[in-house]
Image (tube, rainbow, N blue to C red; front, side, top):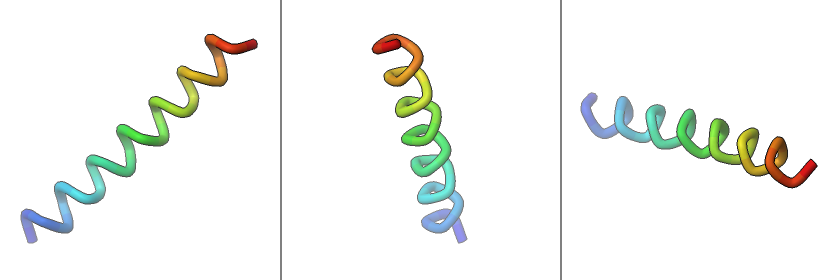
Length: 26
């Protein structure tokens, strides 16, 4: 369960990073 929880956290972090990168680029 901890692995799936960690994977979910990584996905959320990647999504947030992509949003920040797009915001910085624009």
